[in-house]
Length: 261
Image (spheres, rainbow, N blue to C red):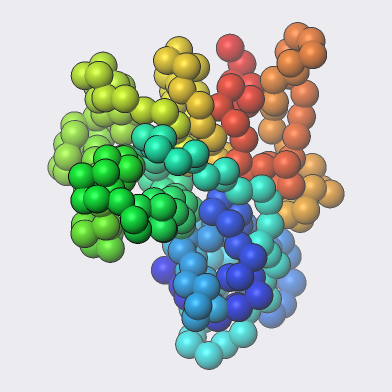
């Protein structure tokens, strides 16, 4: 976790957008690293990045000390669209893909509380229909959820090894709840491609709207280098076309991404 003081970026950031971070003062590594915006405190001008140390770039970033300056571009990309009033929402995160969804949950809950200011407790409870599904290989890889325990968010956890919560994939847990007649109007998800594909297929079968945030390698972050090209369904013909995850996404509508089926 890293906290940045960047008032202008914090003021304009939307859930699902990302930062393009220069990890060193030299050209090694040459490319910036795309890191999703984990949470925002606009009144303090603060941004939070939650990432996994997975190579030289993120290792150098983690070595930064309080007070150092970091070269950051952002906010970049297209973010999530917030749900309509009264919709019941499922937010699904897999592994480190859960990082940008915390910002989304914060914004949805802020809107719910704003709309519910003049409602009765019973009406307010009915409006606070947000289920947060989190999956990981094992319990130690699940993020901390303390800040959501008293905010009306229902948290459901799944681990592949069964160490915490449901024993299996997070998509399996979501499927089980839907089979038990849990009503969902809209799904948001971010995580590995197999998880996103499973959610995409599940949502299409059940007629549920929503959006998926893709995890793609990015070079420039602004759509110029083509390294993050992803396949999108060609609705005017057969097959697929290409869009850039960095500039056209990383958020796309359910049913829009081509998974080869």
